[in-house]
Length: 318
Image (cartoon, rainbow, N blue to C red; front, side):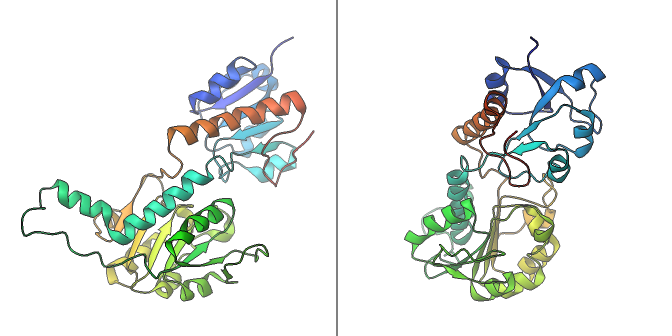
């Protein structure tokens, strides 16, 4: 009996391939507008493992497709609506990266407020000499009021890590979480007006597009700090550059950008910005765990008929 065919468009973590190779027939193709598959091969594909985009057009090519296992907690690049319409399940990799991303968020916050990367570069450049000291950092974490824009799994982990720093914590989501004791603000503007530090950890959806705009940045104020560890889609980068240049906003720490890997040149030259190349979950242990979950979702689906971590928009069982 022929083995089930699993499509692998483009590159994916090598551990996904090694975990699936013994059980399935892996069909590797280039990630192009139209999949270059002959009709016979396309008709055999029942699953897919993907790191990145999976458009509806591909789903239409794969008439027997049952499940798409996406590498990452965010799955905005997968046409989930089209998948749901066709009865195709989509899975992602939540939880296994929560701690790593939350740790990075706190590290990015500290680096931004205390200018630690800049201070290290100052030392490496040979400026630390008798009688010379790095300038005092403008800001301190002490006494800050941190607002979390998004309080899902990762947002809650960030909040737990911030509690020992003795900062006040508030949050904004579309709906109040009755199990959370932090102050809730029903609007993002209300949150920005109340806090001096904003950490964005929301997914890429039509509702989050450029929601952090000039008005929100102005509300944070001249001593305000923005940390974005979610999606670059959320921030109006032109407004951010303007606010940082004018002093309307004090500083920013960014791990994500609107048009990655393109980073606005003006941000690169600013001393009050810390920039990371989208590395929040980028450790070997965490990426290995994500790869294992991608493979396990496919294995569980075809062996037991139920995926481990289906996204809410698509069915979870046969």
